[in-house]
Length: 82
Image (cartoon, rainbow, N blue to C red; front, side, top):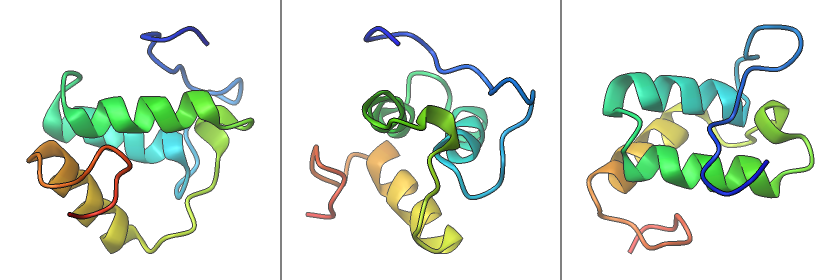
């Protein structure tokens, strides 16, 4: 995937819960495509060998909190809270 490309659903046609693709779908729905949270997820998806299917090991509430903080500009570029 080239920089700036929007990730697409897998061949299965759905996004499994607890994956980068799942969180990207909901972040784009809630925050919009131009959100820093979506851009951060797109970068993680591009870096992952599994792409959209990369499992997210953090608890769902932690991921939602991180994405909200990213969207609101309260985290560093790495995604860690500052």
